[in-house]
Amino acid sequence: TSGGTEANNLAILGLARSRGARGKHLISAKTEHHAVLNTIQHLEKREGFEVTWLSVSQAGRVDLDQLTDTIRDDTVLVSIMHANNETGVIQPLREISEICRAGSVLLHSDMVQSFGKLAVIPSGVEGSRGEGFKITQRDPSTSLRSGRDGVSLVDAASFAAHKFYGPKGAGFLFLRSGIPIEPVHFGGAHENQRRPGTENVAAIAGMAAAAEFVERDREQEQERERNLRDQLWQEISAQISPVVLNGDTHRRLANTLNISLPALDSETMLMALDLEGVCASSGSACMVGSVVASHVLLAMGLPLALARSAIRFSIGKYSTEEEISATAGIVSEIVQRTNAKRSEKTVPV
Image (cartoon, rainbow, N blue to C red; front, side, top):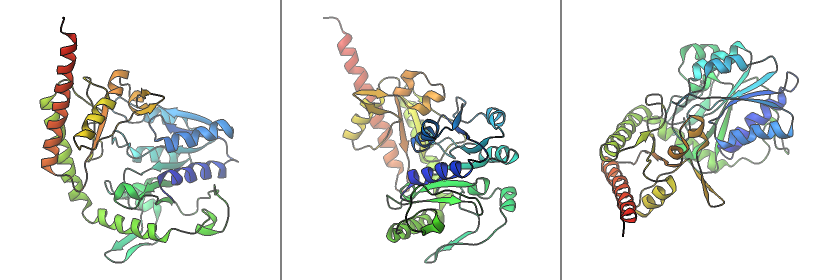
């Protein structure tokens, strides 16, 4: 595909429409990426599907009891992301899979954030230096019991190359063998009539090389990034108070740190960080001049003020301890500088 967004669209639209004879009920979570949220909302608004949106805990994990209770005879698809793009929170995919299989419901997962960080390589994918990847047959029930692979637990999974150092504009959709899916574009019979159009061979080759690159030392690299992430949190929390850690403290990606700094809003912090050469991001978007708080953090129950002051730091293969310490110091300096300016404004004349 051209990336995670197209893969999500193809999975959700294609699987939901192909199961129309069974019903028109969909289940997803309130914390999904907009590539999933907006696609499902399209089916709801334009094609008569009914949607149940699952709540999440303060840690950001879906309510499994609610999932069990909301599966119906006419439920055709459950779509729940593996790891959240804002908080890094990892969902209990095995339990979700067992619930869906018990109800004979297809399960799709947005795994864009997972590849290269968690063990999600498709069962039967083999690769070595210079060979790329090849698919072999394997009993999916065996993989489900072994728990080796993230995609062994789902019927469809979406991926994007740029999330694991590959080229932008490339991605892929894992689809379990034998599951029918309707195309969302029409033309030639490419990809077994699932996705028409000439394949972008250069991007595919780059994606395969990147996949091999990140998988080669994934476990060691994730442990290194986890240590850097924890170092960043420890140094920031030691220098700044108050500061809030958002999301599950244990079940989250090794490279992701999402915090709220009540002293100032995320837009102000991000602009100041950018001027200092620090790359960070926020769950907020600027719409018509007003900062909109992250829907993910609001769904987790964060007060509006904390959601508006949230920023995300992502650690990568090229991050160093020196950069982490420098970043913590810069964040602390920005907060102190902002507080000092506020104090000056409140001094009576």
